[in-house]
Length: 309
Image 1 (tube, rainbow, N blue to C red):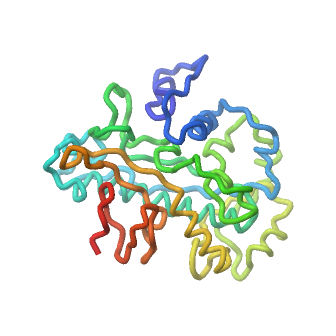
Image 2: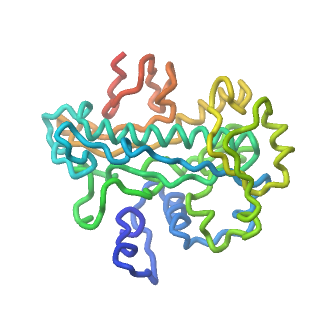
Image 3: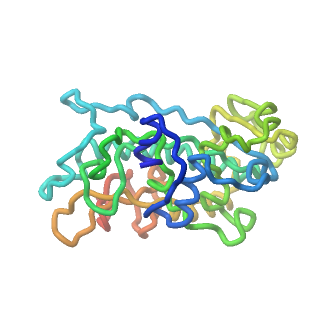
């Protein structure tokens, strides 16, 4: 009601009490939703971390955010076909559009985490957009009773896509970071607890300077508490700020970053109806969280289905 449906905001009301009911990612998910809502008070160093902050805006193309089907109707609306046990859900245009939108955003966040890790900064996440609701049971795109919920959900709770419970032992300093080891909520820069001096002194750049590595940039930007990049370097390959060893470690960590979208109605009672998000969806070949080897471009694989390669 508060985070996904946004009912208080739509009614112009200010809640006087919040209760975090069942939420994905358990305590971490609850805490992060309260941070996104701006009602969780962290210590001052959370807003001014050692090494500073990195922010990279994520403009989402209209074609991904508001796709339309062959009939001209919006795809991100209630889809009764998701409950049809005889439908080929893996080929449903709305589900394909949902994952196209999410995959685009996951790649941006992946590149942001890689850059933040290399630069020794904390990444301020962009707001996430979700085409459909997420629940513990099959649904047509939004949960029953969510009468005021608009699709797509924007901003969308981070736990709709990411597994926030996983943290690296010792944090990012000892190896490739998990998401919340290195990330901050999308609303951080609008927090009343954010130091005004940090916002006023932000260093804004179109892209990284050519030919400068991570260590050189750490030293060059040491006095800038907030760096904003319009264009992020890639996580892997040429142009990455990570060393080859860091890139390998990061790929291993990324397999544990995401959760599932739930659910379509399975074709047979007892079969899973969820679909796993994959942070390495555009990397061929790769092995995903379920130890499936992808030797072909990513596609929707329901439950434990193997890739069609």
